[in-house]
Every structure is written in structure tokens, then in C-alpha cells.
Image 1 (cartoon, helix red, strand yellow):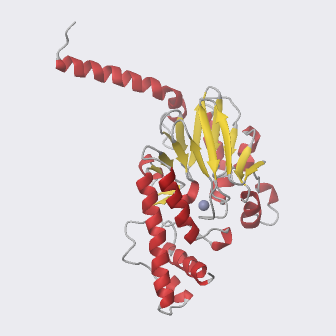
Image 2 (cartoon, rainbow, N blue to C red):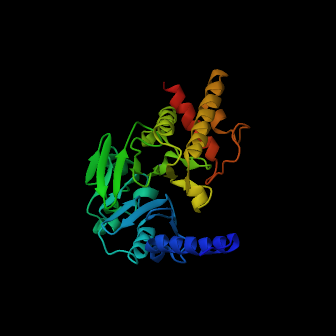
Length: 305
Ligand SMILES: [Zn+2]
């Protein structure tokens, strides 16, 4: 049978649409009509409601969840996932200790076989997140690792690794090697000002190096999930290597700027009161004085060297 070009295009579009429907069917039950669930690719999705972006992977023989937000939103996450699978969570990762990534642990623990995090995360959770009388709100990983952790999960090979201090003293990257998707936790605040406090045992200087290593270690196909972005849609909470470079350049900019201020004899208060600098554009503030807070911590870190 000969088909005209016009018919061919029409037929291809129908077949293409059909295939697309089928491959998305697995996650459509989770995400249908609910904007908090977004399908990425190959059984991967993200959940955004409040706090750090949650990543999840579902296949017939695996359920993996990365980060947990808060008790109420962790429950919303599970309600969506339960439309697709009744499995336990084979691995629940915490990318780092911050409360908007780990406060859902107490709720999700009942579904999870293992909670996995870098070895510094449990202590940082207790030190930084625990309030008197609320000790039960701190649920920490039962499996920890120093440099890396690997696991097979259904059709996926997972490698989690930690390189050095950055956003905190315990940031991990969770890489799904077959799909080539990596959750970066808060190593990238995508075009928003990062939260950073030296009390979390991170380092701006070391963070730059961490990101350089990610830029050279991953390829141009890798799809990254970011803890935070300017919005909650996929265009903001996922991205490519170029977006890591934008984050690194921001950190380099504030370090260079602060170094100059120190050399010029400026005080910590003077530097921390700066509201904007020309080198930083197109970065949104999610809280008051976001730049000033970063500059104060950069000042303290550079001074203590
Ligand atoms: Zn964080």
C-alpha cells in the first residue's frame, strides 16, 4: 500500500500519540489531574507541594522515594502513589537533613523498608531540627554511608554519593543510572537564592568545587531534579548541566564580591546589609534579605580561613 506524505504524517501522529499514551499510562494513575505530581520520564516523577522537591520511581518491582517534605504533604504523596502501587517503599532517601526534606520521615517510615542518607545527616537532624519535647518528630536514616551507596531497584541501578561539604555537611546526589536522572537535593537552588548557614556544616567554597565535579562527572543527557526553583513546574524543578553552572556561578560571584568587601575593610554588618549587587540578576528571593543572609555567611566563612 502506498500512502501519501500527508496521510503518512497523519498516521505517524496517531501511532506516536498511541505509544506516548501507553508509556505514560503507568504514571498517569498517579498524576492524573493532580498538578502536584509530574511525570518526568521512564516511570519517574516529582511531587511538589511544600518544601523540597520529592522524586519518585515506580516499576513492577520497585518503589523508591527521595526526600519527604512534611507529614501532611508526605501523606498526600503516598495517596497519589497508592493509586499505582501497593508496594512498600524499597528505599527512602534523604538528600540532606533540612526540615523541608526530612520532616515527612515520621509518616513515611511505616511504608519504608530502609531510610538511607549520608552519615552526617542523622546528627545534623538532631542538632539543627530537634525542638525540646518534639524528639519524636525526628526520624533518621537506619542506613548511612560515607562516600557512596549502590542498590538495584527493579529495572534501575541507583548510586547515591557524597563528595564534600556544600549546602550542608551531608548532601547526597541520588543517580538512577539507566534513566540517567539525578536528584541533587539542595545542591542547586534553580535561580532562587539558596538557603545557607554555616551552622549546617556546609561551605560555599567547597560547594563550588562539589558543583564543578558534578559538571564534569555527568553528561549532557542527564536530567537533574532540584530541591527548589522559581516555580514548582518541571521547567523550574528539573534541568540540565547548564543549570548547575548557573548555580555555581552565583556562588562564585558572591564569594568574589565578599572577598573584595573584606579587602576594602568592610564589616560583616555592612556586607550583610547590601540589598543587591549588579552581578546577580534573575535570581528570585523566597524570603526577606535572601542575598544579605548569603553575603553574611560568605563573609564569616572567608574570614575564618
Ligand atoms: Zn536544604
